[in-house]
Length: 589
Image 1 (cartoon, rainbow, N blue to C red):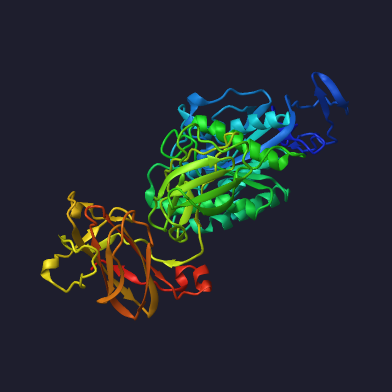
Image 2: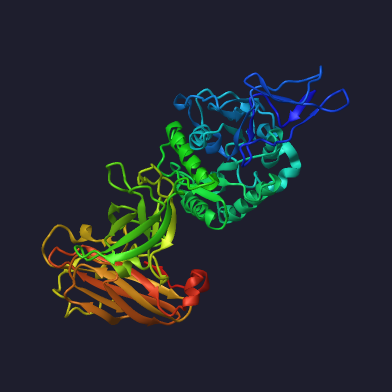
């Protein structure tokens, strides 16, 4: 008799809630008649149902928990093998060659795979990799063995570089020529019972045409697994993408995938997302062997919270609340970021806490310190409450951020953002390209200064500034003499608009729109604070000229900050984002 599914040498069978296995197995034999079975433990028969001369023996069968580990390369494992951990006898893996053995990386031995899809995707020979191959699966299973006290089995099912389109459950009909179909086959081969799924994927979907539909694709995948694995409550734990060196052109989509992964448990039951942004890499995109062991433990602890019959620790850290307070010492605003499920206190290993960023959609910066206080991070900025109200908060912004905040259980904060800090406003980004004039002799507090007329003596030229603060130190020079300089830009409105210029400055200033004086502050001084002056004006359809003068304040003034707000946009339009309303187009010339 040949057993085909459900019983294999060294297999781990999924236990029931009573710690028993009732998995079915199938096979074939040339003879006909009833099939009898005998189970023995330590050489003794557990229950004798008889024995026939024509028999087969399956040795070393364990009963415990069985998991599928699937996704792309970071699930498959690309960490350096020199960091592989030792195997344990009661922690086993179903390798790609359809054999059970003690779990030791690489468990995805692709060069010996049974399922055709892996050869189809390889686009070349599947060679033995003697350098890389550490993934999260082995550490996950060993930690689950510690958490539960029962044997653990991993069914390896990942393949590097694969996208959600390649994992589409609708390709199940292709059988082992699809990733989903091959995974289902491996599940059936091992008895058709499972404890849960560990998933690490998303890098290949951080693109223009796929990032926005990642959540929909993930929900379809989880729903299909739960249907085809006959468990509507099957636990599903996924990894939030780590960093990638370079690929800055994909930053928006990379962060979009991370944000969708963070939020997925809010709408999918018995699902958890585990952050990985703080873990070290062994190359430009793959979590290293040492980091994979940490990740495996985090995955196991998150899974244990879902699957344990009683309280089993805390879920992964989750963002709870964002608020702002005035920093009484500096006069600027602090952002208070509170988190749920923190074990002990937040910490940063004795180093400066890093990872937070605020942006206006384009430009970041403005954070000069982060203080950790129990389950809170106090993010100190050089912006006022007004300035923060148009900003978005991030943790782990971009493709290669440095994030080092964890809790006492060595669990990272999740990547998040962009999350608006204040109420929606119809704001332009800060202007960083302006026309500037030559430097003139000063005019004191600018009270007697007249608006400039078109004159070759102005020597206008376009200047691109490196930051939201348009720093004119290079033009003013190191002198303490009183000086004067003009800045200008042009607005084009596709329709009549009510606008307000948000102006920050650190010296005396005068502001004209279409030649009409709109604002004058003779006492302007440093520091420059964004939106120090909010200057309203009506703009008809067409072009408008904005010019303002800045006095050097005897060498104390350095520059300006400028942006525009449209103030006649309704709350409903603001909730729909800029697609529902028009903003002025801003040009230097």
